[in-house]
Image (cartoon, rainbow, N blue to C red; front, side, top):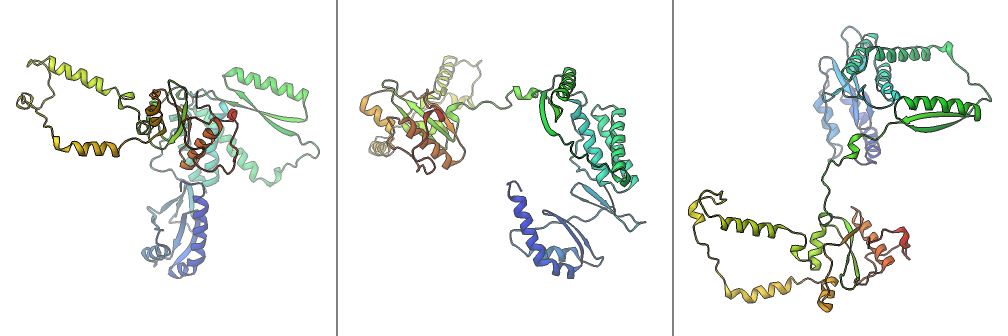
Length: 416
């Protein structure tokens, strides 16, 4: 259900399933069938075997497997509603259902956010309780749970009770048919929303002055001011280490020659360092480990005394002379393998023909895209716009939408 079309497709499939199997399900003992997307609330006859109903559903399509949950302690959760089957009544009761993973965290009372945010945190729970709870007993229990959650997050009990009282009054006024208010004809105002940054109490004073000013200057407008809190502190800190450019993937890159300033534009879906080495970049360009290894080797050989820390497993292996045998019979095979793995690249060819040096460490990442086809299009657009001298092709894929390319000012500059 992660794709945007997944709920729509699931609803279409379930509608087809219901149309096809409903008669068979009723014959097997299904009394009520209520569905929301792919979650279904089903009532069965007392003599019905649940396994038989499950077999009918699972045999409809090989890729669809249904699971079921039976009522426990005369109650069964469905979505965010707990349906209760009381023993002394023939009507179901409903109340709020919270998953076992519910933590009770909400906007803290001491958070630096507008007061409307804190009000909505309580009001949303109150409205949810008024809409779902079917009896005064379950409603009173849910109000008590709202108080507990609010107090745990630092809310004053008087603030919570005020929100509950306002919610109850509005619900009673809505149910009272005698308090219907008819709209005034000819007095409709155009509504406008204005955002104001939240900086504390001065924001409320500014809203009040703006409201007074707008009512005098533009009485035909219904201006609604809303406040927006400042960015959270975590947005100013990076939670992940930045990836160095030669380890990035799915990029369009450019490389320049140090001696003649000719450039090359390419793309890679792998890490950039792998593609650069295929172009002919030396391994030491982005690797500092040989130097570190050499220094560590010198340290090991310079301190052979027994008091130094050794990485050898035993003194027998440490003192053993290591002789690397040389096999002269494989010289021909080694040359053949080197010839087979010779790098074929316009950059390597340019270096071979002119003797120039490529600025491997100064390559630039011009564009990014995790879609392979869009990455080819971006590479083609840059090649056609900037016409790099070292590229052998004019484009990677046909530019159907922009056959003549795009102007340079609409594209990122691969040269910086």
